[in-house]
Image 1 (cartoon, rainbow, N blue to C red):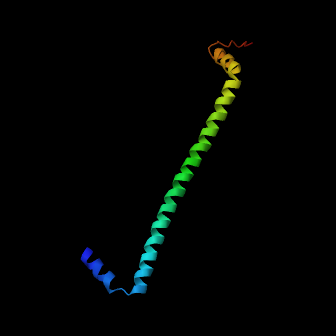
Image 2: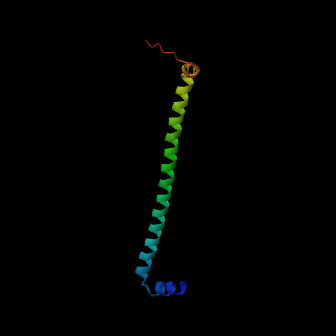
Length: 83
């Protein structure tokens, strides 16, 4: 298989070899940029998720007394007066 590729490469003229090499470099550059942007997008999504989590934890910490009071009321039995 590599022999056939080498033969095809040797049959190419100098200008065609340069163009094929340039195409290979461009394809590698595009693949690297795609990987970089994909990783960067994933990290940005994680950062947004972490910011949301921090905001929720801050809200919970600031309203801890209200939450504890509501939780203690969950166990109480509510009696309805029916006439």
